[in-house]
Amino acid sequence: MFSCILFDLDGTISDPKQGICGCVQYALRSFGIEEPELDRLEPFIGPPLAESFMKYYNFTAEQAQEAVEKYRERFSVTGKYENVLYPGMGALLHDLKASGATLAIASSKPTVYVEDILVHFGIREYFDIVVGSELDGRRVHKEEVVAEVLSQLAARGESDPDKMVMIGDRSFDVEGAKAIGAHCIAVSYGYAQPGELENAGAEIIVRDVEGLRSVLLGGTQAGSGTQAGNSAQAGTGAQAGNSTATGSNTLSERYRGSTAKTKTKSGQFWSAVGTSALAMFAYYVISLLISSAILTAVSVVYAIGLQELEGSSYNFWLNVASALSTVGAFIICYGIWHKKIRFHSTKEIDKLSIVPMVILAAAIAIGMNGVLTLTELYRFSPTFQRVSEMQFDTPVWLGIISYGILAPLGEEIVFRGVVYGQLRKVLKVPYAVVLSGLAFGLFHGNLVQAVYATVIGCLLALVYEWYGTIAAPMLFHSVANLFVYVMLELLPFGGVFLSVPSCVLFLVLSAGSLFLLWMLQGKAALRQKG
View 1: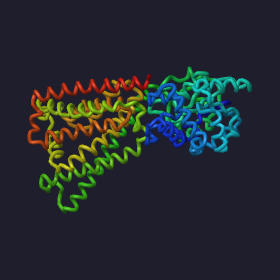
View 2: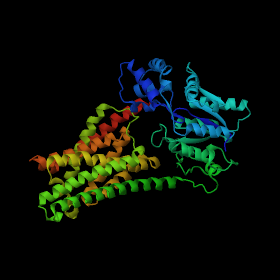
View 3: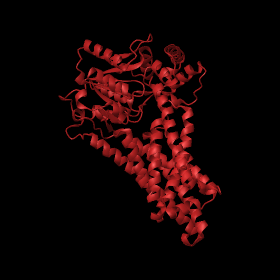
């Protein structure tokens, strides 16, 4: 067991969202900025406040300092108590202290507030050292905070970094541990973005407080081993939950014995592929089961075989079953994998970029339909012809709901939220984009839709990457589907869009819109970094 355990506070010991985000709202309001959604302010949890105001709202250094003062105006009275301990944390701290470990707090929050919060929760007695930032702006970066903790530990004769571990929920905590050569355990129940902890190089990542207990108190006594900097590579932190915890060979074996499993880059890749395949399989099977149940019920009600219904009635019920099965699959897959999906973007979004994104969605949808029609690829896919006939032989309202709204919601949760999200953790953007696009294409099961969906899928992945929220590809997907449905099927002159000149025009328009979208969002990303 480690002799010294350093804890971050916010997002690790307690959930401070209500207090921190509420005070950020208060500070922004003093500048005439209304931000009603607390979720959008989550990136403020962890990093230095002044830097966050400059990063996310383009404040000058002077404005950021003024915003920090307004923040503290509310936080010092109310905000610091709008906080809650994570379940099981109090008991864990008690047991760690009873085991003989030296516990310390290393927080970017001002020390005076940290002390008040620890006393408020009744856990101050467990910590030998409490270090935070200073109200005058000194020691705001995690490396400085951790260095001060190390200095105070050295004064107690406990200065061996190999016997220390830093526990936190953000990349800053991992970097702080590396700065002093200590080990690091990251917690994914805090406020890290997808892939953040892995990319930072956390040695072990736990999913909950019980996972943390399992790592810290459930293993063998610490033996000799290399320091954290040598025992783990960036982005190779492994997950640990209630019963399992695996990470770098050194750190895992010190706690879990020689049977601990290591997770190499290859292992991470196949884990991501496995999760992606499971999500696709679950979506398909759930949709199939619900659809079959609905069609069986209709058959029973009509007291005849469903195939005996007239063509339009048969296709109508197939579309109803498809819509309802999509709803069911969406709900179940969302319930299982929603924690892996980015709903609230931390990226700056250029609102003007939404215009070329919508144009791109409509143009590429028509352009690709034109290519597939002009090449007569459908001749090689009887399955596509049957599917197309069924999809468009339905009332307008049902087609809009099913293919313009429900299908984009369900498919984006699985293919961008899970599949692309998982691949993005282990691959560079171009590879993750192409592989997720191919998976989306092959999922559709026939040649024509496979080609179309692969191209669209790659663009959807890029949109998800650039905007950092699943809402963006959902909008893109919905626009593409609705535009094809309306222009090609409902308008009497829809066929004109499938001519060679029209096809070329829409493809050129797609390329131009893609370039403009990339430029606008690229500039937004540069502003955010600068």
